[in-house]
Length: 129
Image 1: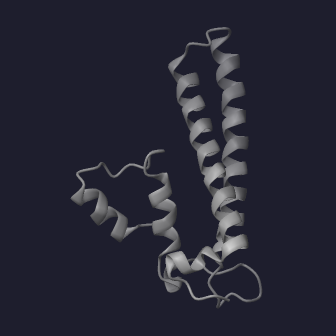
Image 2: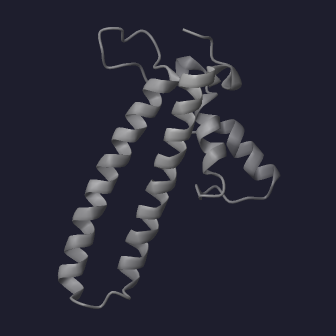
Image 3: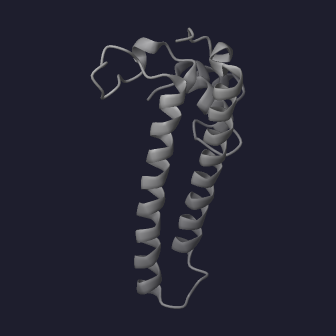
């Protein structure tokens, strides 16, 4: 999903348009700040309502689990293919992705906790529900 405000910020700071652990926090905040009309609707019977921030984090957590599952399957295939060579570039790339997903999950837990405890939705300009 395009994040035009963040793209403009990154451009003004001469940063690459690449999601890294250094800007992951900004990516999440930019995504939460999007207009509700631009956020995909719920799959439940209330499809005309945008998801709450908490619901967004729950679906993000599910996507992280799916990515972890796929990475685990890929890791097993790569290990079988290369045998005992644990210094493989492919293994390094997979481990980097595991680390990235771990960071995303840490931020999800942190932000979801803030929403539950403090009503963080005010921070990203979304009306309370």
